[in-house]
Length: 279
Image 1 (tube, rainbow, N blue to C red):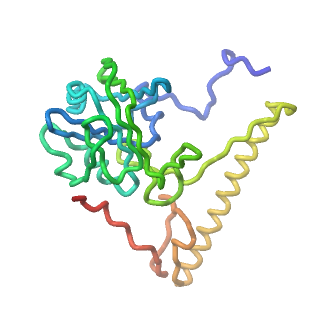
Image 2: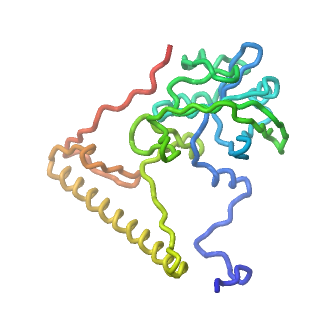
Image 3: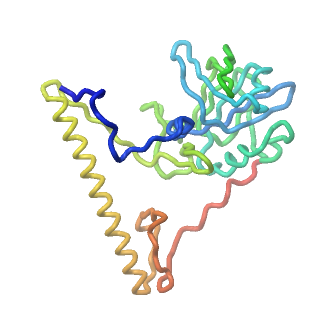
């Protein structure tokens, strides 16, 4: 029998945070670029506050701050599109988040190419991983935001980014992976999947699940040990003054990995330029 939660204190290694921090804990999903148009003028805005609401009919909710120009435009147009940008467009996404479409043409500022949607009038952004077109069916003010409920009227994907068989985003280091928003100016991508294993009918679930946790922790310890060994090997090569190809090591150095590079030569692949301007 599980311990009575009402008789247990919170773990000592946890911390209480302000209520407003709840939205940050929910971050981590793919960022979208919301496009809409009103009276012939298009607009685009990055957004991370969205959620599926229903499968039949297919409904999606997006939460937009009431003071945003986008909120006003969607209220008039009664439609919007969600565009899922790929990793090379991380700088474009951050740049668009700092602009207001009320005083500037964001499409002109970024020179981002568009193409014609299927069922609405809002433009779709080229070079994205997926697109969802929606018509607004309900609008609800909630605090300092407005919840727009959109009925999905068209969906399009790039097969290089979305696995149609598994019905999920692809993962790895390729440039056609979607961007995941972490907060501020920090983003991430999916690099690998973790498959869950359920206890079988004849197994005691509490014992099997406990063993699964222990296995995962052991794998994490082994990964850290391997990483430390590779970092130390890198330090030794640098100390000897040897040429080291960091890309071949497949080593992602953390901020706290301090290496003295004065005695060695570090080879890296050429840095990727920022996403080029589109015609």
